[in-house]
Image 1 (cartoon, rainbow, N blue to C red):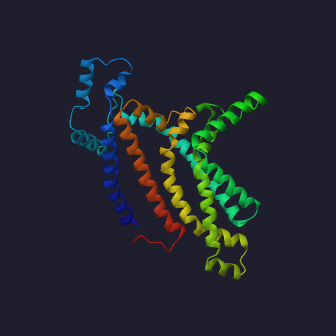
Image 2: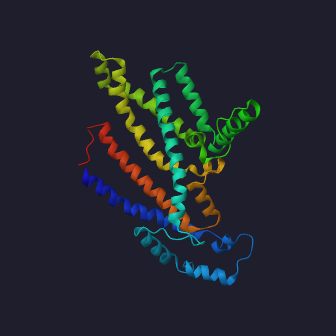
Image 3: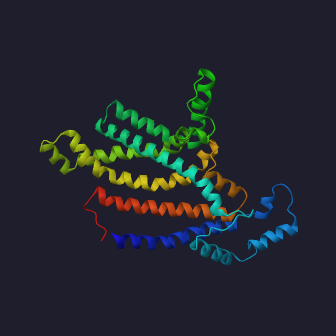
Length: 314
């Protein structure tokens, strides 16, 4: 197991270098002058602009800029923005909001998605099964930003104005604690939740037809034990794969949700960096997301052995 983990960590290095190289090249290729973008609509002072370019080596060739950046990354330095702030500091300020949002969204996605899928599979062809299929298809068909604006309007505005009930705030308020994250997290998790429910339903129905499940039923085991201990445990393997990969996706996909609910997280930081053409911030955020994705993928692979002891890594 130890050698497997070390091998996977070594394999992550070229993936990290390749991803940062691609994003850095895309930022380098963006049209426009990042120093002028920093000045906004005013024309940047030529002397000041040239000083900024020299300070941040913007006149250097692309490969030299990338080499300086990637060597800094492996030393724990994500560089500075054009305003002189440390990218690591900017990420550390925004990161907790996105992490909290992604964790709450992940919990909602896993609990509601798996429960809905299990109930649909156990009542195949009945009303509950049809309800899950139709509602999940409906959710998948609607873009996340539409879901966000509709729920924000209904639960944040209409309930308060028409009935005097305020369950959720229209805009994110950190002082509300966990309640502040519930509505944005549900919006963020909505599409993935629908996929988890459908995947759980299909996987559990296939597992219920397996020989070892029929044997367990023939032995006279209780239905709850057959489903919980034999069928669901094996049916969870593809679901765990999806959930693990989706955790990284939730972190990266929070851009729209954070914008709708005015959350100052990684998504807002990334959107602002793209608008200002600040390549160092963009690559820094993407590097962090790539590392999170690699770690979650490794944890999912290790979890396989827990769910199915037949799986060995050495």
